[in-house]
Length: 616
Image 1 (cartoon, rainbow, N blue to C red):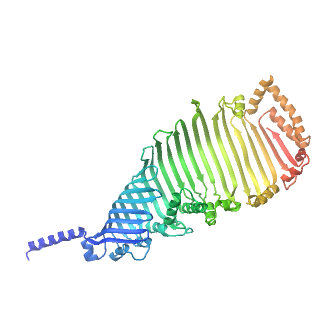
Image 2 (cartoon, rainbow, N blue to C red; image 1 turned 180 degrees about the vertical axis):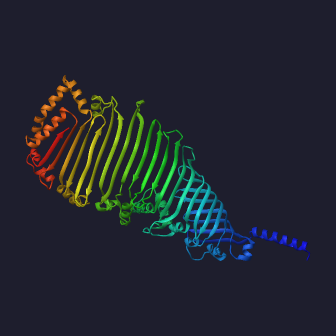
Image 3 (spheres, helix red, strand yellow; image 1 turned 90 degrees about the vertical axis):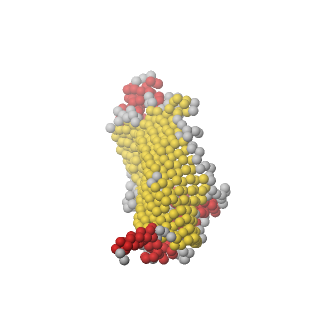
């Protein structure tokens, strides 16, 4: 054969081979398999002639007209392309067979370099509503035993219909990493409320989420939603069973007590089936159409951080700014840390079919969640004073509010603290409130106050430490109380009322302290009272100081204890600064409620105490 002819034949063979590699004849057609709620149909499986003739392994193939029903949803794709498939062709075909084996096990048999889906339609009925989602340009990369290293979706559009209104949602680019698809699939079939949490995917991010109702009355945007270490576990009836049952009961107009109990158990089970290392949304804005007082607002950040080691879980919101009509609310931060619904969720698991009405005190207490610490900072509220005076505005500001309630015993927190700092407001001159009128009479046009109460039970020493009970008013003064209560046994927290009452009676005070500081209130009072009585503040001050010993002795007797107290109070009135009073029972065991009840004369109570007092 001549060289030129041989070259031409080689070129033709090369062209034919190349065409064959890219030509995808149908290897399988009209596949349809199913198992209960899971149904799969594929119009055709196409693969290259090269793979069919030589490797007998479907390195690259395409699925046409795929329709899959699973988990109460239907998935439809015109085309699904797989490349870099490293398993034998027979194993690929077995994935689409009706042979035994769970969906999770079949998914765990997939190894591929990439899977691409130009468009995926997902339809799901939730109660009376239907949600239809369109995902465009999906790419799944580096799949090993069903685990996807990286998943991206270019855009997503969702429509919810069937309710009172239509809701439209759109996403920008979505990305997931380390997605364990077999573990995710098992959640829908496995029935086990006691299974441990499993990481479903490592991280996710969604750019630019827009949501609006069909009538255009309300819209919301989130600039970015992201998270990591997303965990989940099965539920008692599987996710399929739980979600279906909840949807069925939610559609009923009335439910029986048994159905209410069942619904409560299922919701609690489902809520406990999730956790995350972090979920964070930033750049949140929302607005209404301006009708019916539908306002607008924004939130800089909303985040949930899961517990890790010694660090407690936390929910946090920053930069809240909401305007509704003529009212406006701004909050710097709202956070809840150290909270736990575990007692509630675990308690519900042990109740079986009992309703709340059938539970005794002990069972009800077992359902109380642990609050942890709630913290609110930089709150500013502005609104009209009343409908009759639209031009007048009132403003209330709060620097800090913090509440802690944790370390529960039988559902009752044993560590409690409430703090409120810099609560300020204007005092209107036409207020009907008696306290406001009194403060206005003393010359105060605004109020700025703080309040703290804190107490802790020590199990080892069986003592309750009242660490602080204080009230402070700016340009007024402050009052601070502290104390220690002994013989505080665990019976104080018993769900049995008789046992708890006996423990209260048995508790005894071991010490108490009072500190009063003046920051202008005494001077204002003396000035106001002097005007009413037609005298001077100095004269009235001397009169009050001189009369103090007589008043005190008439109230609590003329003992050494009362004289010590009277001298200190007189000195404080004469030169208002700080007054400190400390008291301890003479009996080392403490001073109890029975000591008060058995005292023949209230004045005799003072004789059982050692009192020290001084004015500075």
